[in-house]
Length: 280
Ligand code: AMP
Image (cartoon, rainbow, N blue to C red; front, top):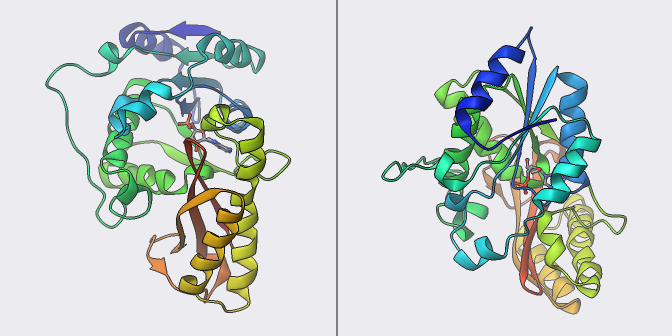
């Protein structure tokens, strides 16, 4: 496994290894790896000739300095895991390599970055787009793998690729969960055992909401039901929303289950978690 912390030698190396179509598969991460990340690495290994994983906790996508400071960092263990997966290349830069002074830009996504995650985390998607665009230019992947756990992020990245004509195929991958249904997340490392048990209510709520929506219940009723279910487990609901899978228009009820996704954000102890469920 080759490890790089600087852009120039990484580019030189990749150019010597780039071969036929679908040669480079890319998995951008912020590290503190879990089985969700590894599922993306395995898909890239299967479908491409050279798998590149980046590990970089990108400051421009954090609005809250405390969240950035407390984000789990486990680089040595991550490298060990990636070696075991036979990942070919890891790019783990410092911030001075990724951001030069006075180079900040903003990217906006009308209709996508002012609702749900965008509303609760102002500037988040602009930061995600900045770093993903930089990484795409550095790695020049043929295929890039993203988890549907961050559903809105996949939509933002897909829109950027389409709008700016990046030459990369975005591959969305299913959510990997713990045995109790909790979606795997690096932030779960900050939960106590008891909080991990409490957090299972998030997935329960999505299942409950799916049943109720298919019975014809409307979102305003459902949000209050779900808020109460969460409160019973000491979990604070931030939002529960129903959106069109393709346009991300927010909806009040289900007409076609195959076209909608249910999204949730909630606070468990000190940690904010997100999850979602495709209805169809
Ligand atoms: P992160 O390190 O949290 O930025 O995540 C890196 C990539 O892994 C993103 O594309 C995430 O959507 C994806 N990912 C995170 N958690 C999961 C999960 N539980 N299942 C599948 N993919 C995931």
